[in-house]
Amino acid sequence: MAEPVAGAEPLPRQMRARLILALALLALGIWITHSFLPALIWAAVLAIAFMPLYERAVHRWPRFRKGAVLPAIFTLGIGLLVVIPVGLGLFRAIAEIRDLTSWFYLVRETGIPVPRWLYSLPIERDAAVTWWQQHLTTPEATQAELARFDQRRLLMHSQQIGKVLIHSSVIFAFTLIALFFVLRDSSLLVGQMRAASNRLFGPSGERIGRQVIQSVRGTIDGLVLVGLGEGAVMAVAYVLLGVPHPILLGIATAIAAMIPFGAAVMFEIAAFALLTQDSVTGAILVNVIGFAVVGIADHFIRPVLIGGATRLPFLWVLIGILGGVETLGLLGLFVGPATMAVLVMLWREFVERKSAPLVVEA
Image 1 (spheres, rainbow, N blue to C red):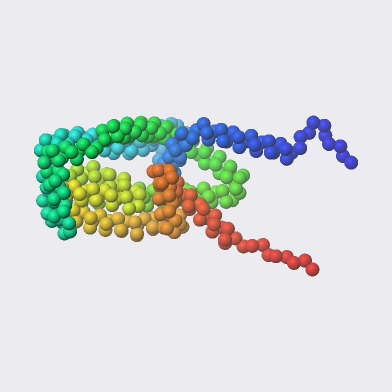
Image 2 (tube, helix red, strand yellow; image 1 turned 90 degrees about the vertical axis):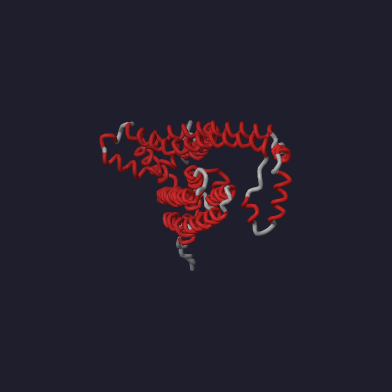
């Protein structure tokens, strides 16, 4: 009978110790970096989205393959794509806040006359006009209504908005830093991830990776590009119908349109702005054009772009988008559909796998 070698540790015990150590270090790493995980995921999403264009640039200028010039140019360009529209929107929003403040001071002194469109309401016209006359027509009534706003609560909300903007700016800056390194070391990262997935999951690992990439790119085509298209169409409609600040509202519509049915909120705001100008016909046309654009985009274009890229029924795409937004915010637009696409792929592989034949021994 063989004697155990002195000092030799049983292999299962070593494996358990390594697994416990690895899990503990992984948990510690997630705990340390959890505040920056959204930035890292955003960097991965942006890298997946722009990688085909980046690879074309690398093939076009091969001397920049290993340098930092091309990744820096791409990172700067992607950053400007976000900073310029957001900066213009914030600049315009500050101007709007100033105009709104001046309007508040004016109506406190003069009151708000009954708009003409209120007399055109098909139902409850007299009740609406009477309420307006009692609560907003005279300076005293207007001041009483404006006094309902709690200044402390408004100040608290303003401070919270400021904190959110500062935090978002920090996350965005770190996202760009991470994106630079992901682009610069993309070949090395892809090779390492492929080797790790093959070691952990076998052939299924690479299929999962391809499905995630296709899902992210399909979601970008179906949400971002279609949303920008909706915003452009509605911006033209806003200009033609005389909506105030049509370009700014068109940009806001494009951003809101990235979430299914989100554009409806923006063109309803545009319709209300037209009503305040006594343009009932314009308000109706904004609604007609808006619902037609949203209907075509959400029921025909998006299912083809997203579902075709991921082989995912649009119901699950919609659940992934809405559930992802509710859970992860804007990042959930891309993480949600990618997660659902991988789950549906694994489910199909499971149910389509042939069972091993049952062998009955005599």
